[in-house]
Length: 376
Ligand code: F6R
Ligand code: MG
Ligand code: MG
Image 1 (tube, rainbow, N blue to C red):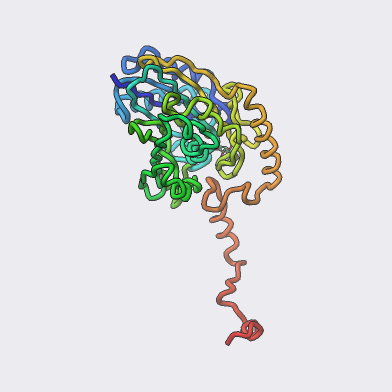
Image 2 (tube, protein in one colour):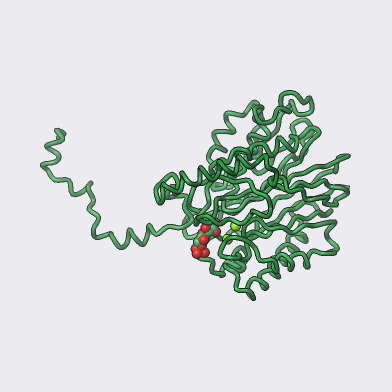
């Protein structure tokens, strides 16, 4: 029988501010899922202020029942969050809940349905204070870069390469690009992670799913797109797929991602153990956690908390150095994101306030200036 692994996450209230999740909320989520007849197994964890439901079942992807269960769980958690007056209680569920920003995406979802192999190791990646496109660079390295994944070169089961399903988050389109042949084309798109994001990766030899992310279409709110929805990603490992070490290797380099403070800054993605997934400095820096599981007839054997390993100490150190450097840019780009990509802006109000003080240089050109320019 096929097994589906669903990872569904939502920010339903932060403790304190946007830093973490209160233990009572986690407890409530566990209470909702414990012994539920739809599920084979589950884990509830938090990364930053997001509650992550990791669930296995036989209902397949996009199961209404499973998604309802997740929704109901988040709703029950929201009650707890409200009681404790946690910050932004229910922010990803109720469009009328005030959280101080205009994120309106609802829960994020990553799901894979697999025929379990003799042994089925998977890694669940979960990030806070960044956007789904944050997976582009690591997924590229994991599945297309032989300098990261030597298996692409020397493992006969991987040598055929992988197919990337890329989503255009603004026009809601998708395209499949096959690596290595389409590698340069792939990079044209996924090098722009604010718009294009890798949704899924498939093994080209078998056509089987290799990875799935929580990339969703961005919401058009108040006339502009917002979508720094803290993402999750599931990656299958070993025996024809990248090894666990090849999946983790890209995170030894804390690449710059969009998000951080007010979803409006660029900063390093810092790999951390579960216990350290509580962004603090300038509400960050953005964090990523990697939990490993062995699936055993749907049972989640794990988690194994990979980034607790000292092998990632230097990545954390480098992330902090980069954070120091970026922070000194203050409100200037490229630390602060480009105008189109910020989650917060005062531009319309400031423009309105100053509209009488702006002088249109196109219309007010004096004849003298024109003469000076020497153009008739
Ligand atoms: C970023 C994030 C935080 C908040 C910031 C302001 O994704 O969640 O950095 O944007 O703490 O929050 P509000 O506007 O709720 O006061
Ligand atoms: Mg939050
Ligand atoms: Mg968050």
